[in-house]
Image (cartoon, rainbow, N blue to C red; front, side, top):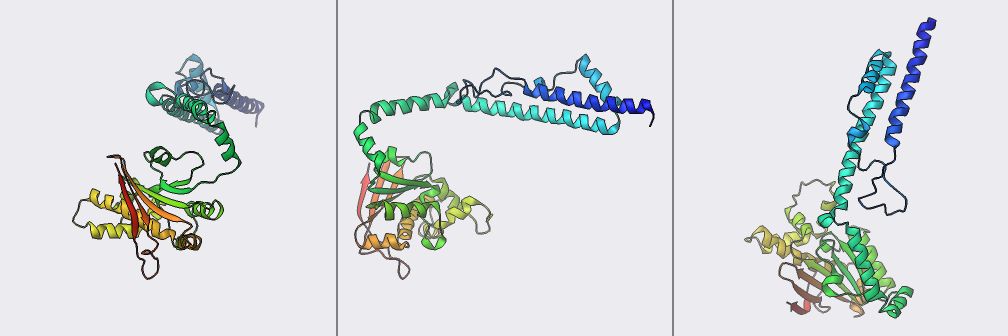
Length: 334
């Protein structure tokens, strides 16, 4: 290799390093744009890339840019490919940052341009002033230990909030919410639902379990639409199949009705199946038989704002021999 070729190779390597530093420095320039329009939740933190489009990271060709392109074309193939990869990475990062900026803007403009966390903060301060401080003695008492009378199992649906609908106060109900408010039987193995049940019944010794179903339940609609050959990898399918018996009964009892009516039938039937599934847990059945625990079902119709309530009858209910189901103390609130 001649001295001229050696100098050219060293110059090419230096050029690659300089161009890489240039690209990195462009990415690291601090920005005055703050995190999600209005400042970071962490004091002093800013997102350097929010607010810049990909044109800032990859400016329009200038005389300097054209000189760079000419220099890149003159490089040996190995160095040229390194430079091109760096430029491509810079462009891709610009696109990703532009997309991130757009998403962050959406989050910041919830509710007509107002940051939702501003509203959330105000709600918390109102709770503190109107509730916590005025009832400070009660909140200090439940801070030491909880003694809820109810274990509530409700749907994860954002329109179904038991504390809001039924007025449960802090410390009154131990709650778990899942898709379609289901209780799987003991034989199906561990889940977050039966873990919560075990804690509520054996440790907290709640006196009531209330399973609440509701109208227009997306989980039940998914169950009723489910085909036997559906994708077994779906988490949703694996969960709602816990209520397959309710689906089969709804299809049989409402065979000549519309799909929506079948779903409504299944929404209530799945609650009853969950009540029976509770009795598959020995520690629940034992307390139920000793009348230390009452098991209730409920159905909230948010289309008409009505609530149905019923209680599982100890005398007429059993999981043996296929299972028998009987209720008492039915009520309709409207």
